[in-house]
Image 1: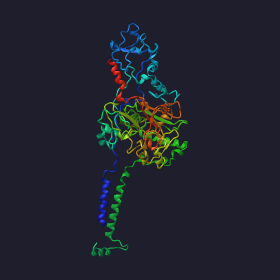
Image 2 (image 1 turned 180 degrees about the horizontal axis):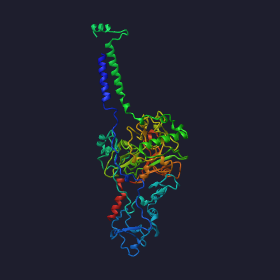
Image 3 (image 1 turned 135 degrees about the vertical axis):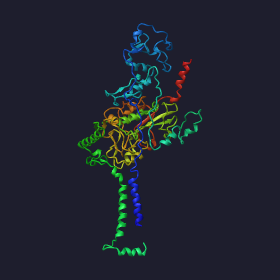
Image 4 (image 1 turned 90 degrees about the vertical axis):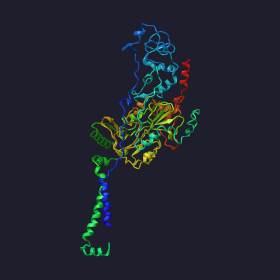
Length: 216
Length: 337
């Protein structure tokens, strides 16, 4: 009997001493993120005053040409210069709605008032009034530096720091990697394109493309 | 044993009634038993100096009972450890909450594109483990038309975002006004601060994960392994209750970047958001944007029925779901004449 117990204990000793040791959870992999993907200071380059344009590799101020040459017809499609700009601003398809026809160094408000490029939010506000109202409070756009109203660090980002005035709608971008959940990676890969879950009432409407997203 | 053997046993016993055979047999069993016990405890051999707490750490008082000098001692101890581990001297301090401030977060679901920059900016700011990955923010890809979280998918990896059929909902700790997590902590390692943030003292946490189980939003993360942070990943701007490096076996979560926000700054997730979907501020200030949002937008919270009173509000404010932009169609028609 005691021989049996001894043998059992010796087997246990071998198991614990020689076995895999204290198993630790899997380590997983590092996500590969480039620093520019999470750069918190990134913004579009805003046109300053006086505005400049790169023509044939040379940076020139606008009135260098437009002070001399007359502009042609008003349709943006008949341009012969600045062809890299494709104006996609919704129904606003007329360059001179925003750019002063007489002085290309300035922008123009409705009512023929010229403003500096630095005051561009006044121009955007002239059509997008509700958005401007939200922006001034901080609801639209982004306030960098501080959440505290009245703090000198707080700075509302100007419209053109996020929106390209010639193509204001944001283009889709590539998302950063999904989380590494370790446990359920295999099963989750299968579910990746599942769409609405099993218990989702919308599943009934999956093949009925006529139905609008319902009142669930 | 048979009768013969028994007789032989008795014959060979000494004054104590112990024979050589029985001694060897019993001690053999006992020694092998002890060997098995020691082998079972062999993981203790893998302990190194780091795992054993110093006297200072061991007799440290609870955060709420520490006075200024206790805190300075703790900060010095932690700074020394960070310097030893990473070779970088941290700016570690204990920042007290401001008076008259209650932080609230609002997130515009019409704007969020699901790019996950907030997730990784948070990781970068808050010294989280890179491997295994600890991420405080989880972005759910939801099909348009439902707010049923069960329908969400956090593993999406489409080539571009957004796609027209989904909206995106990032979820992080909501710093609830009536949090279940602080009620279940057996050691009061987590509590709500006066400015609304639910904080964790990583030195006090015992790693039981009751809080992780109690949270209805999966806000809390546990360090199953020693967090892997390389010196180039380290953010040396630290606070005691927020982003100082954690050890294996403690729970951590979003704390609204209190090392930034208690000094007036914006949280990292807000600063990096490329579409301005995130709004943060002091709800006790009627002029702040979060107050304005709560007054004018149709905000909602997740899992309202469990009564946690989150301080994280979601809202939609655009007219059409993204993939169904009637105005864009109208513009196209007008352009084509």
